[in-house]
Length: 156
Image 1 (tube, rainbow, N blue to C red):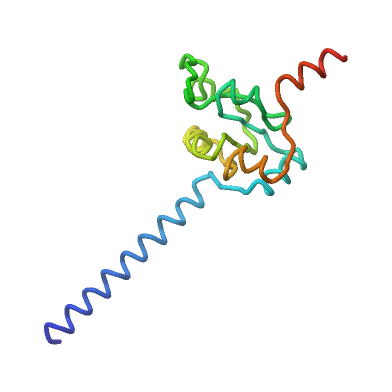
Image 2 (spheres, helix red, strand yellow):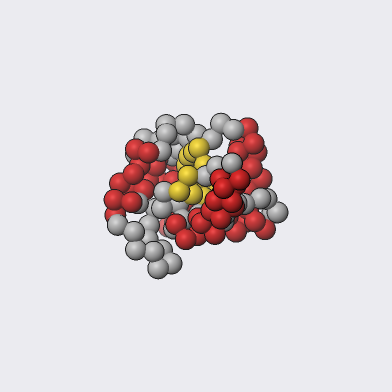
């Protein structure tokens, strides 16, 4: 083999190794236990009723609008929230049942963080709703506010 052919062969081997590495990293992500789902898929999961719906936003965000039946456990302090660390997901992770979990936030970033935290804690069926509650609302799906619940409770 001449020097030019050897360089081409080396470059080809290098590209194959890079492609293999990328492929193996993508497979790891898919088997990590965290899966992204669309709002349509999330709605179907909720309608089936076999999922724990976890809202990881701040209390103010949750009180203004949330998915009916969702449980609030903030993942972090954001948007001026100043919750003590014992009120955040890291400290309250044992409150999340060992079942299928749908996590959402405002846009999807905090839910990804929370999803990874849950997977690292041993949860195996964790779904992060892409686009968060903003995408849910934009799709025309219903939300409730804490005021709605208070009004409903006062009628009972």
